[in-house]
Image (tube, rainbow, N blue to C red; front, side):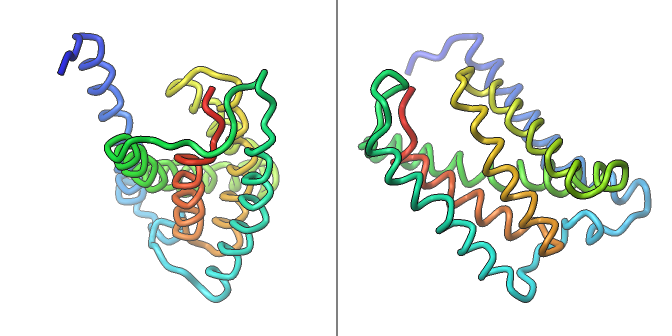
Length: 185
């Protein structure tokens, strides 16, 4: 396996960023003496959360699945992606881990602070915008900005249910979907 020095640094920086995003919101709560529940960081699926999550998944991913079959070739290769088993496991593991890490940071910590400052709608919009811009660091491509729209759905799930868990479940399902259906740019 040929691993270059910049690859090692990129992996180390990615690990540090993920650790920060995962643990900092909990540290913030403890340091300020605030309940983790205020930030949605006590995971639970309250009344109607499963219904909301399944409904959001069906409403967003069913049309996207059909769109992926007719994705314009000029925009990238559409249709089902057939990765090797190792690539699929790698993508799935990374996607599921990202769902936990990103939802704790963006919908749990950042969205809560923004709601306090600007109100619910502006907070969900702003947090979704920052979320989509951060995806450009992973793979600079205009299609990464489309994560703004599921970010809105995840923000609504977090706000409506008072926990990041519905957003984590939705995000994880979206990431699993993306392994096979996202156009390869």
